[in-house]
Length: 608
Image 1 (cartoon, rainbow, N blue to C red):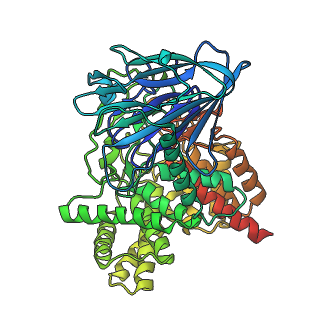
Image 2 (image 1 turned 135 degrees about the vertical axis):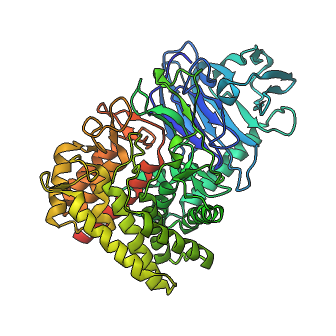
Image 3 (image 1 turned 120 degrees about the vertical axis):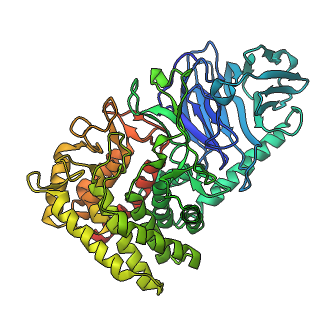
């Protein structure tokens, strides 16, 4: 790899247990196996020299490239356009199913549709984040890269019109091949981890069958969506992106398939997001129910229920995040040998925020339980008993400093959003008990809920700023509070909320983009600056719409859609120059897009 591509110049493919990123020049520069949170095999995204990559690109040709998805699927098509020819690269991963496996396949099919074009193939895996050495085994029908813990087999797709002159060259670094293809000619490979046998030639018909099976699976899945609104293409792409980031054996939704992509190039805000946050799983229930995906919503909810019961049985507090299999070990370490994306170090794996106290997670969990119940997805007796004990714990522990939704590393505060979502937790728990006739100390829950409400109004609202603020000891604004009217704590027409929205308008909003807070005014324990936070930008749209500013909301939403990548993908943040920043793609961003589109459609339809 000669340089680092822009974050947005990547497409995502996956098989519902792991995923890969492929650049607009055909380079596979991120792939972990056998799971999303496993060590990387190709990690060139974080170190172009030491990370490993698989390049399949035009060679010695002036060309432009475009990427698109096969409609209704996450099958990625990269088109190479030159004066002398047009080539197409098709990348996809056959779906593996809901049983955990080490066996994963990634198919790369190349063909020339007009003229001729020379291509370079370079396969240079670097196992375990480039820390493990590997042996290269040469076979008559392919190659095996074997490390102490994993193997990667390269099978050729055997097209008749490719002759023996196109045999690859094998070195200690990997496999290298340069070949010219003419109109109608094709080539390709199947990469396979955990292959049970030696490499073998794949007949073109078999590769085509895998493509058709993958296509049919995804079109069948997205065809179940009930969304028929104004932004169907973007909503469906977001839904498929979220599905790609779901670990099928447990139903866990990861925050992003990448680690270490910086919020600011050259800065230290580089985190590992390949885990499942309770918050994200809860938000996903709302988004998926709005699209009619009740099975997925139920599976996510069951994953959350399992974590609640395990924490209770073990006598330990809930973590804010877990691995995709539910295990709690997310020890953070630094990959000192990786230079980081465009020199953005340190590169971290694991996540040290896992054991932070974030009180808002209880509100998000209970809100999702309440919404699921409204859609007929009712929990078990055992789940209810665990919920009761959790709410009793919250009654005793809500009034304390915490680390907050943004996982700051500058010390705990009495964050207003944490109090807001504690109010939501108890409010929804009371409603669930009443609606379902379940036993609980609802008198205590109600009394505590009301105390939280009074405290927020007395201490969370800053009379000098005429706005709700980040925490009780500051006058700093925080975009997380854009959720206040949507969860029902304040009416969108309340003067206290209207003045808060005006303050956010003036201080945190840059055109349609929203900063979550100002680090200079509220230090978060990390060096560097913030870009705008995509989820907050979508929450801002919802706040505008709820406040009666429908025209502003629709225009802001349409502007936000222009910031996506060419494939309709969003990272965590957007820079002032309109570039994607942070881990990519980001579940938070796509969940917020779906919920915002559904809410905005409903309000616009009602408005006439």
